[in-house]
Image (cartoon, rainbow, N blue to C red; front, side, top):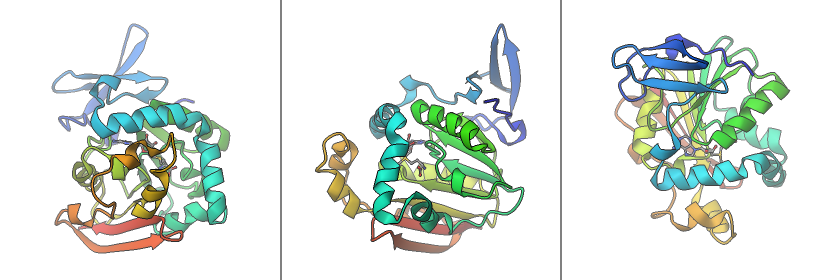
Length: 260
Ligand SMILES: C[S@@+](CC[C@H](N)C(=O)[O-])C[C@H]1O[C@@H](n2cnc3c(N)ncnc32)[C@H](O)[C@@H]1O
């Protein structure tokens, strides 16, 4: 897949300076115009992180998803068969998004791109994930299903996007085990335009109790701190209309709010 790279929404996730694309020998990079820091573009995906930067719970998650990535889609099909099939189960939360023609839409932790298959084709999609294994599958799916999506390897806690770059921002299924949930939420809000509706959804304590008993899946669930709940207490001041709903038989919380 040829990732086309919309440069005017990108920035260095650590300095927020603008980036330019350069070629050196056979490699392509994005370079911070002020500090000269370079980010390699590997297989059309800019790398805003390296494996050695990933630690703590983020490292556990990355290792898990790198190994599970080839089976993720099948696993999801089986799981969603208990909730009326994948399309219905994903639409149960995707219906909270308000995507209009031409919108720039960011999925933080895009995984294999499974949500984007069920969203309007008339928008422009951007996906970031910390697992290269998941991004590889996403790239394949993008070709298979003809998705209009640009991919980035990075950490949700340091988004490589400029302030107010997106019309729609959402995250599904990873935040419970991020190293720094508050920072990730602040980043999703920073890159959203004013008036944007954001959606953050993840599994509830009910699911954690189930998974903690199952070998292979139990890792993050077994080591969780306290009881899982929607991270309402981590929201900053510049949001309004906060709403929490539990869907799919109480297995998924959906936290919606608007940036002001
Ligand atoms: C359950 S999957 C959800 C994927 C996709 N959103 C979906 O609904 O199918 C969770 C995803 O979160 C990603 N993830 C975990 N920690 C992350 C972090 N700190 N930054 C970005 N992505 C992360 C994982 O690599 C994985 O792809």
